[in-house]
Image 1 (spheres, helix red, strand yellow):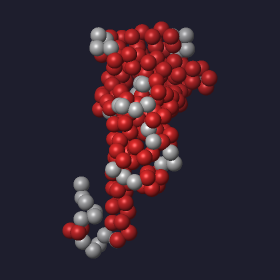
Image 2 (cartoon, rainbow, N blue to C red; image 1 turned 120 degrees about the horizontal axis):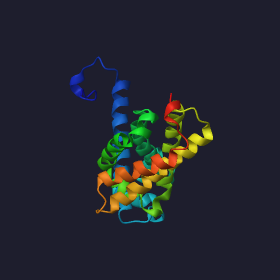
Image 3 (cartoon, rainbow, N blue to C red; image 1 turned 90 degrees about the vertical axis):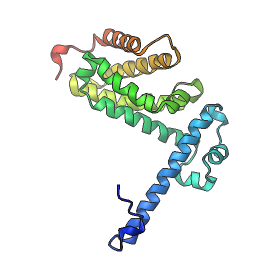
Image 4 (cartoon, one colour; image 1 turned 60 degrees about the vertical axis):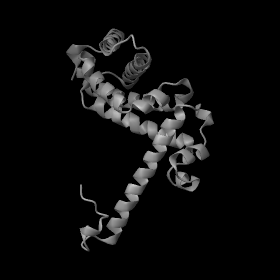
Length: 212
C-alpha cells in the first residue's frame, strides 16, 4: 500500500489530500487504542466501573481526544457493538436464508471463525451479564439483518420474520455463550444443538416448497 503521507510521494499530491490521509490514520489509531483499552478494562472491571478517565489513561490519550470521537462510554460501547454486529451481519448477508435454514452449519462455521478472530471482545463484552448493553445492541442489529434476509427468501409477514429472526439469533448467541465456557461441548455438538433447536422451532414458519 502506498503511503501518501511519505515525502517521496512528490509535489503532485495536494496538501489537503495528505492532511486528510494523516488525519484518517490518526483517527483510526485513536479508535483502536480505545477499543483495546475497553477490552482490557472489561477483563477486570464491571461496566459501571469503567470511566472516561480510566479508559483514556489505559489508552494513553487525553480526555479531550476521547470526546472528539465519542459522547460517552455508552456511545463507545454502541459504536463497538455496531462494528461487531456489522461483521457478523456480512456473514448473514452472504447466504440466502433458505441456505441458512436448511444448512445452518455453513453460516455457523463462518460466524465462529469471526468470533474467534475477535475473541477478546466476545469473551469479555458480549457474554458477561454486566455488559448487557453491548450484547443487546448486537442482538438487535442482527435481528434486523436476519429479518430482511428471511423476507427475501420466504413469503411471510414482517412480524413473523422478526419473531423467527429473534428466535434464531437469541438461541445461537445463548448457546455460543455456553460453548465458549463449557470445554466439554465441542464445536460439532454446538452446531448440532443450534441446528436442532432452530430447525424444530422454526418448522411451522417456513415451508421449503414456498421459498423464493
